[in-house]
Image (cartoon, rainbow, N blue to C red):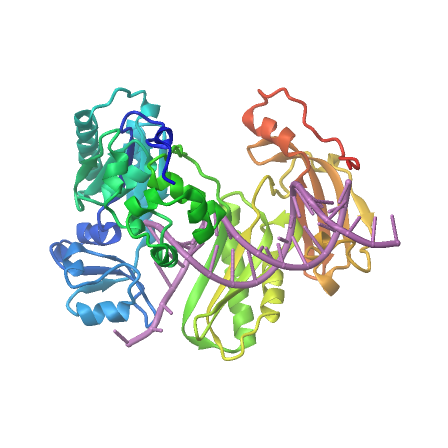
Length: 464
DNA sequence: TCTGGGGTCCTAGGACCC
DNA sequence: TCTGGGGTCCTAGGACCC
């Protein structure tokens, strides 16, 4: 029924994981920069008709203003507050300065957003940490953050795992420090509502409640198989581990980006297809710029639409090779939008690119000093794509023919990599995408080539 | 006075391959 | 010739987080 004692408790024996959370971050930055707002109700978020609250200052929270509430409701609850649109460039700068303070403490810092991060003290070589040690470290860090940010306060939680640290940082906000002693995790969690566990939202809480589970203690008693029946396999097993405080997830810096997207909710619903196409094109350009800035490219283009009744739909299509080209993304977006039902108008349109893994995009023909050495073979475009994977790539009647080949390219600042490339010639001009043909080889090239293991590039034969 | 924008992860079904 | 199991890829949707 319940958990074998051996599974209780987590791998770490010190409360060496910190979770740092800046207090009412956006609002605090606004109060920092405008002294007249200090001590006053400040609400940062969308200020238009369909805006929602990003952050409310503690003064505004007294009136029941909360994140994710519609700004209209916030205005009715707290009419005297200052309502401000967000200034993300400023927040990013402040965030950078704050994260730098954490990195001065430990090399292993995992930002979760602009205002939150995990810090791994064990990675800083600190061990045998007592509760007092960690409290002192947390207070020093808070002082450093205050200094570096021009007066912002943070709340810090610490424990033997990410879960415990995260929950602890919320218990004494604002400007607090809570350290949970090693060995007390399960009893610390037991009386809390299941919704304190990140990942348990309204839908999961509802399902759990139908199984009689309201607190984490209830969850600790629930059989894992029963839990999996209620909420699914992945969610169930991870919940079971979290609830019993056997959370050994590592702190990970530099998480890879998985997708890049832009979306916009309109002040009034839009029905005009031509207008939507133009907006979609502009969004494709914005996505493309952000991909290029991050030196990324991707294969899957997704268009998102939200109807007047808030139902949301996505349409996506995957290219044979990755692209960051605004024309390719824009054309795909337009095509996907044509397939979408917009009758009755839509309140939101979004364009995104995903499948960003293991590919390098570069402009072979203008940037590479080795461009002339890359063989090019011209082929006729097949009447029909040979399989589904190329279907998305050849954008229908626009394509005159394609070129493809294999070679290598000097990726900008990243060393030599082997690529397969394809060029679609369209009336709008050539559209090139290319792909790393041997991810293992490329990984070695990018990492400086210590790994001697030969890349396993052999073809798979029939194996049954 | 309805519900932002940026993401992540998971599920489920169908296509396709071996 | 029929049946099938496993794995991967793609698509659509949903839950969730800050």
